[in-house]
Length: 322
Image 1: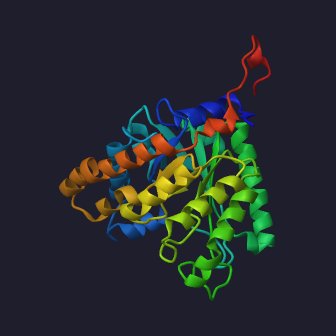
Image 2 (image 1 turned 180 degrees about the vertical axis):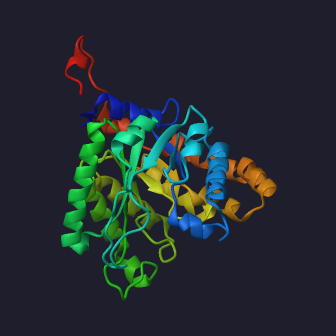
Image 3 (image 1 turned 30 degrees about the vertical axis):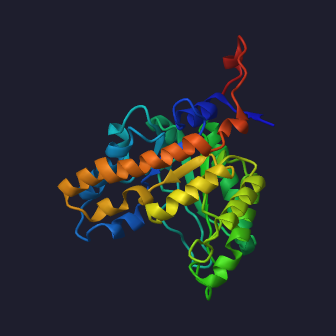
């Protein structure tokens, strides 16, 4: 059963979708702290902003939308292809607290109102979340609801990105012990956070493919994630190589995902290249990677319009619209 959306949120999702299809093929480049560490240590603000501009400029003509940030991404957002939608991040980079108790903060001086005024189509909000963290999980769910309400007040749809982590400091996320419970955590996260009011979930692959290589298990876990989520979800790339991400995206879309929202799997090698080599890579290999992922989404992804209907027009609809 579809739910009617407000005009701004429906248009925001539509403007971020592939032309003629209600599915997402979004390129992400909203890294900040990790981005600085990725680049040469003597990189200036101008260097960081320019590289972001190069990547987004090269890929925005193909992508259904671009996700970037206010710190380094304004120039790229202003110069990117006008046919591509724009998502802007709302959360502060990183987290406060320790590695097993991660709290999310908003960027000081940056609001949903400003995101709307800049002309963006949607908001991305990322939280570190583990349903087993109990009090912190409840606190984060309250924060998410507040953020969603404020974004919806400006009629902006919200792409919510919950990043899982281990609440046991002795168990690393990359370990076999965490891999054994990862699917349970990711799927339960989708179940809970898809009911906070967010419009789309940006989800990790539910299995750690270093420990589980069976595609049948991948398909089952993605189907369970789709069943758990009350809203559309897209797959994030989480920094994996393109050769790893493409089969994940294929199976996720075949199993109910509404597309992908991927970054480093497409463009990360460019960060260590000289300028001339970088341009050739972005126009060549990175563009080809994006083309292949877009073909997967167009052919296999579940339309988000299975969940949402446009607002019904009446002669005086605008009188009550606020």
